[in-house]
Image (cartoon, rainbow, N blue to C red):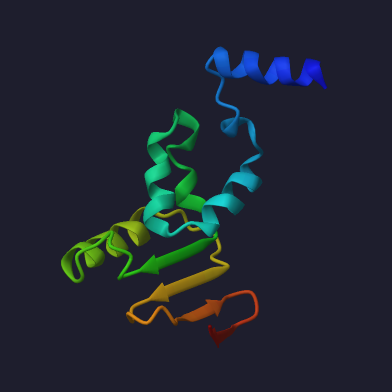
Length: 116
């Protein structure tokens, strides 16, 4: 156990990026849980992360998350997201446009929508 802690401390001290050593599938899973605007922002973390957001199998948009000014900024972000995203199959698309934080979630694997 002590050896494991020492190796973790040595890795951190050496500046090793341990998150980037995760398998790509795991990183995509984590990014798919984030709102799309935050997933895109991960491109500045490291060279390996520069394009990972493009193949995330989920799109999550929240117009009232405080990230966008409703209208032009959101429209520009969605247009850019769809334009630069890889043609990876999309498993889930979640869009929140009403202020009461209830939303429709469309699960592309099941082919149905559910009111949450």
